[in-house]
Image 1 (cartoon, helix red, strand yellow):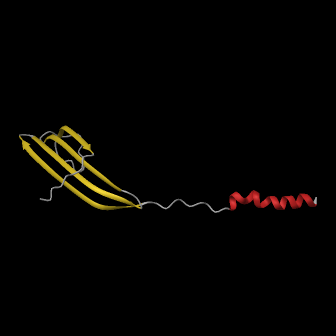
Image 2 (spheres, one colour):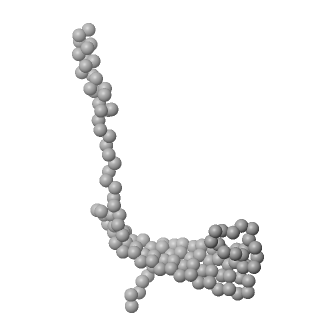
Image 3 (tube, one colour):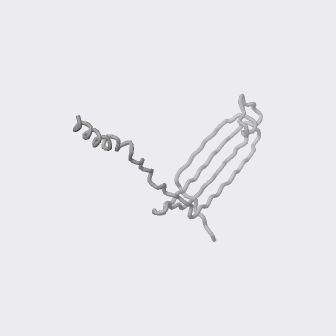
Length: 119
């Protein structure tokens, strides 16, 4: 009986070890910061009769880096075109969509960066 108690006393720390060990914390997060960022946008609209055509263009280029880590470059160019009949009534209007019925809508994006000419 005494041997069983000694064996049980010696086995308890090994049995409880998985629950007694501290939980390993997550690795330190990489902190990203912006080194340089340039953004440009434009809106052009034209009305011909009842049709309103709107073109929205935006483009950006940026450099980011982690600490420690290499520098990463990103670029994005986006074009959105919408043609509306301003006299027709739409069944549902968006909060900032304006009046009229949408006749055509197109949206395109790609990874082409903004090119800035300082001269």
